[in-house]
Length: 216
Ligand code: CMP
Image 1 (tube, helix red, strand yellow):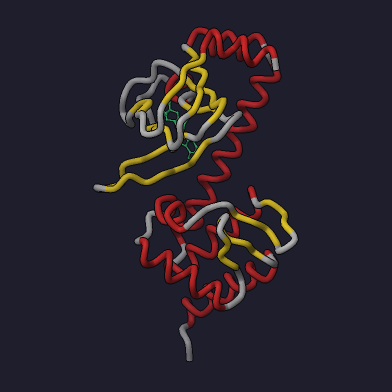
Image 2 (image 1 turned 30 degrees about the vertical axis):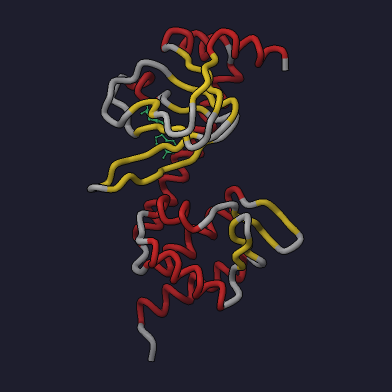
């Protein structure tokens, strides 16, 4: 797209994997749009860094502190080499005021994020790590799963699951193995495949019942 090239000429910058774009708590000076590569949005929880989201091409971040004049709500680190548009507050505001389509996209994206946060709250209320892992994979399958002949693919490996959920690596591995043994998921090189999401939902309800009433 010619427009995209022009935008890159004006606002584009390249960043290497591992570059820290900003840290949680800093004042916000600009917002970013991902053109290529991936960015991790991170939050320090006790002494570990939890990945709240991994953003890819077409997605944006860093807009919140510009809109609400509060410190950065999370940090941002390049998860891969990539190209980003770096947009200052005045240009950002002019873009929103001058283009209804951009404003609508922004509102839709913020609604998606709120929905994901609600999902995370629901996930944290589950009692055991097994149910939490099953719930998380199911939500990901419903929200951004890719249809394949084997079922719905969630492109996420164990390390990503572990950092997104704030569980121990062993807990995630154990839960994934148990769920795969019950044939609710299959582990594949690209991530995890859910052959039947309805069956997975029922399995989650079963796990919750078991947790609540115990095994007899
Ligand atoms: P800001 O607070 O300026 O800096 C951190 C940015 O991370 C924030 O703006 C959002 O753009 C982004 N962000 C915060 N929380 C989430 C989340 N749960 N999912 C995706 N992006 C987020």
